Image (cartoon, rainbow over all chains, first blue to last red; front, side, top):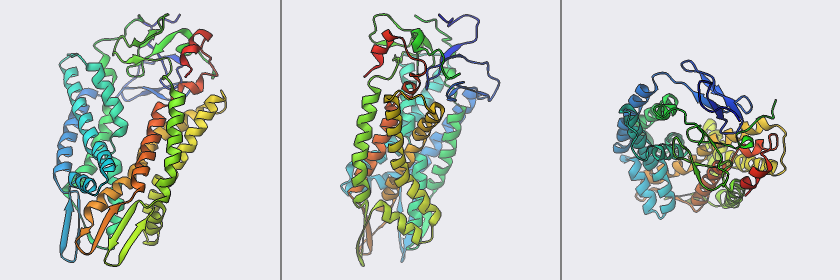
Length: 209
Length: 217
């Protein structure tokens, strides 16, 4: 039976191929990959807590800007139409496409908000060295929401739709468009700087029960 | 080199959330991670049957998604119905061929290739194949990563529906394919999430007979 605790290097199993292996001690910005299937096992971003907190705060501000301002607009024969994200969802809802409207609302508004809020709460708890009840469940929720937030796909979708309209009308990029573009960069950066190992460092390795 | 000791073969469970190893209890039943309290499974329960069901459902929806109109444009010149492909053709003809390629890949090729890749992964696990495991592991990571980009067309429609509403001049409405198309994207994403990649590697390091009972669907 392998040793799981003590002074030996920590043992883990790859989450993608289940191979048992020891984790190397990582220097800053190094990452460890599975020796068999090449899946990333562990990363070691520098100043994870500080950088992730700053990026999450920035993302929250950008998210507000992206949702309160007009995204894009068009001008044709003196008429001007501008649209906000929630306005666009509402238009789709009123056209009888409630299911699609609900999906869009969830993927570009609801899930990103929940993910940011829960990540913020987790970071605050880690900073205070507090492990409130539901700490683990909160992180599991953040993890399972991550694939369903699709702000970056929305931005590409806006570009495509504007190209489709460019020959009919002049196109106006709103404040929210640029806020969304910045939000994508900040969200991607925060995913890179966040180190889940922070969440368990106070608990340390637990021997197998 | 490929064969090796897996957690399952020595009776350990690895937490997918925090990486903590714990010993598998003798009686079976529900186990939770002692460190983060996540539910532990040697292999994702009913992974194969769930992934099969979701993949087949996505294949069915792929047809209406591509054959029915996804967008209806009405203007004083009359009304025009666009499928996903005719939308791509339109972009190509209007000179923006880089975007036409992006939309073609995101909306037509990615869902199709993703369904084919899922079928390939499912069948090779069922045949207990040990061929090209590293490549299949890469394929699995790829479909997990690209799936979301197929939502592109849905967002294009949302923006167009909201923007093009000039009374008497032109309006855009979402067509019946929008719902099926969104369905294809969601179902293939769920299928990729429910597939347990560890099943691919089990033929090279088989779990002991006693543990195998618990991992079958």
